Length: 351
Image 1 (cartoon, rainbow, N blue to C red):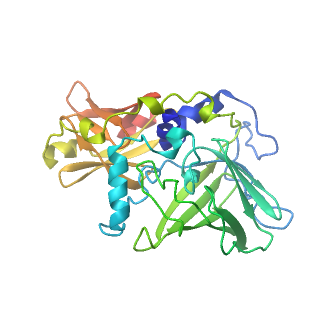
Image 2: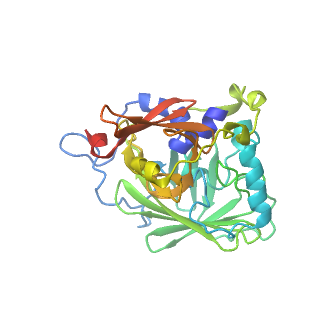
């Protein structure tokens, strides 16, 4: 469903928000005197003495799920891949695997919540989409000539307190992000999970695909423990009706693009925050005569200018800046299929 695709950009808000209706205390976790989870408590350990990564987790807001190449320089994406990415952008999500309820592939961990179940020989990762991965930690090597699959094959080992997961054997049908960057079957993915304390984990992901990129692509993100709730069932193809309605082209959306000087655009630059849980943070910056958007301070994607206050967000979202009675920008609205998300500027977001 298209809602699943676009909602994952914001921690799966369209599909994962129903889980917030469940208010059930997670048993066995450290708590403060007032009963709230103590997320800075020490890292739990497995019987083997390694950090226990088990639990429900959510990756911090990030722009990489929209554009995995946000930090790359021009020319670091191979020409064929750049051209295919351009074609997919023009098609407005019509051919994305998620639209057709197919697996998210090697970077789904950037999106909605997921549960890790750690064992001595295998660790499972269960995604909100209903998909799962198996990471074998029994000493086996990756298969030399694997049958390509959506999720590939994963093996893990410990380097001190860091779980290092190596994956290969992917088919080339999945996308690396929602804007449509491709990869080949040569892709190898390395993930490094480091649980800093009870409620916080650092995740580093390296994509190595020399047929697609001129060098490995590495990103680092924070991951937070999600207490006192559960994931609910989500079946994408149970009511899939979107694909037949996905018509048109991205260029149709931006035919009215206008040019606005950097001086005017600079009025919008700053930090913004959605006041509702999970309190998404966004940054608006100016690059030349173009506004740039990033979530959680990670990566940045360009906004197309449609009017002095209206912009077009990659993936089909209109973004509108709102001014107060004095003419100063107070917030912006991101219009999505799930509804409008309000991001308040500066200190007002904390009130």
